[in-house]
Image 1 (cartoon, rainbow, N blue to C red):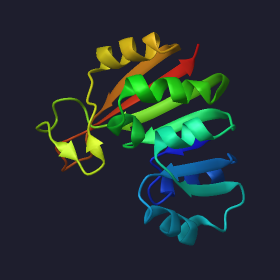
Image 2 (image 1 turned 90 degrees about the vertical axis):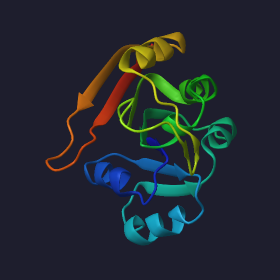
Image 3 (image 1 turned 120 degrees about the vertical axis):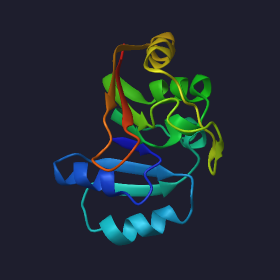
Image 4 (image 1 turned 180 degrees about the vertical axis):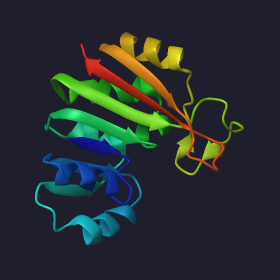
Length: 158
């Protein structure tokens, strides 16, 4: 399992405790030591500092699952990133990612770059165009007391 934009590693660490093996990649050099400090004791879990497209171009590894939880898929041009993700996925692999629902905040550049907000229909078309199938998009309501929910997208490698 690969997480692009793994941050502190908490999401990936949880999945590793359930039996997965995982590799977390994050652009920010400060995130890898934090993740290693917190989760380095878990077998089958590794963290690296790299830009997502550079990592995908440079690795020979393949992954059954690629995750991006408010991570690289939101910040890297999908027409650049999705073919690279697809090239590193095992047959039948799953891509799952999340970001804020489109229109939930004013368009603005983020620290990591421009956000690629898309509607559910736009994500479905984009993913299908890049060789994914069985695309599912869910809009998850915000927690009580919060104003903004989450868009969760899942697709299979066709």
